[in-house]
Image (cartoon, rainbow, N blue to C red):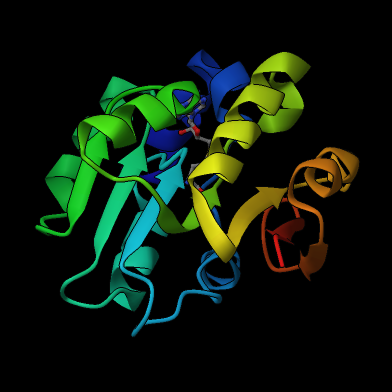
Length: 184
Ligand SMILES: C[S@@+](CC[C@H](N)C(=O)[O-])C[C@H]1O[C@@H](n2cnc3c(N)ncnc32)[C@H](O)[C@@H]1O
């Protein structure tokens, strides 16, 4: 999807999108920097958009790894299907709030990483809390929940749910943002 198409989706669904432009290459790199090519075999992505971070995740994954990407917007899912043809990708046109249910259906108990671009600042607090708690239950011990934000406002909720949180600035992005690395 080109920039104009992404902008159009954002205008129509701003409360779900939370941005009007794709993440920059610098943001995509930082979001995927903690993936271990050898060890990380099951990864979840939340809020895939039109697949810009999805492709970076796949590029870092081993041939026998699997990526479960969630995207609630059907048109964005159609774009991902058109542009990414990779048997390691399971694209789920559904809401992140049901992530545990979906993983149960796929027979997945625990995952190595969760990489999220969900715009939690626009979500009701209870929904954010539910999604983050599901993610904590799904994550293997000692693995990371990675979240992109344009503000540090919500840091306390991540600290409460995941314990340790490290914040990295990504200046080359519109707008400049942060990557939260949650977990120990
Ligand atoms: C900030 S955009 C990120 C898009 C892309 N990953 C990027 O970095 O450019 C957030 C995405 O989350 C999706 N989204 C919002 N709420 C969702 C939910 N409950 N479950 C799954 N995806 C959701 C939106 O449709 C949107 O595509």
